[in-house]
Length: 76
Image (cartoon, rainbow, N blue to C red; front, top):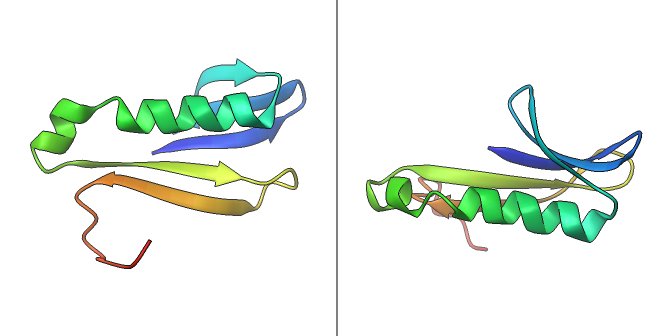
């Protein structure tokens, strides 16, 4: 799971407690989080899944993107 969220310096991408990257803009951070989640194609082919959780400026979740096996089968 990769989070794109605001930080004191701008925006950051995290996975668990680890900061993966930092960015000046919201758009750059979202792009990096999405790329990180999509980057594990080999894992997806084995049936695994990854998520990009995209936060708003206030820190609340704006959007969740699931790649791979989404067991919930919800639209979108």
